[in-house]
Length: 214
Image (cartoon, rainbow, N blue to C red):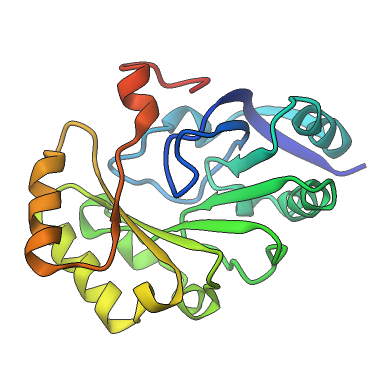
C-alpha cells in the first residue's frame, strides 16, 4: 500500500492564492530538496510520520470542506502525492498543489490547481526552477513570487514579461513577512501597472507567530 511522509494535517483558512479566506483542509507532506532562506515551514523540510495513502484521502475527505491543499515541504518530491491529488479530485474536491517550481508539474492531475512558486534571488534557490514548468502552466494554475526587496521585484517583473505569465495564468506577488513592507511592493506594482495580484499571507496576521496548524 502506498504511503506518505506527513508533517501535519489540519483545517484552517486558505491564507494565500485566489482562494484566500476559504476554509481548507491541508495535507502538509514532509521533505524538500530546497533550502530557501525565507522558508516559513522549516519543520516540514525533514522528518514527518508515515501515513497510508488511503488514510490521507479519508482524512481530507472527512473534514467537511470542499477545498483541499497538498503542500509541504515539497509535495511533488513524494511520488505518492500524485495519486493522492488524483484521488481527491475523483472525490470532487477542489485541490490546490503548492509547489516550489523545482520539480516537474506536468504529471500533476490536470483537474488540480497548481500554485507554483518562482523563487526570487533572495531565496538563494532561484536557479533551481524547473524551467519547462513555465511552459506547462495552464489557465487554472497560479504563479507566486515572494519578494524580500527591490531586486526580487525586478526579477519577478522580468520573468512575468519574458514569459508572458499574466496572459497564461494568475500571477501573485507577496512579501517576505517582516522583510519588505507590503506598501512598498504595492507602490512598485502600481507604478509599473504590473498585471499581477498582490496578496498578504492572511494566516500570519490572524495567528501571528504561530507556525503549525494555520
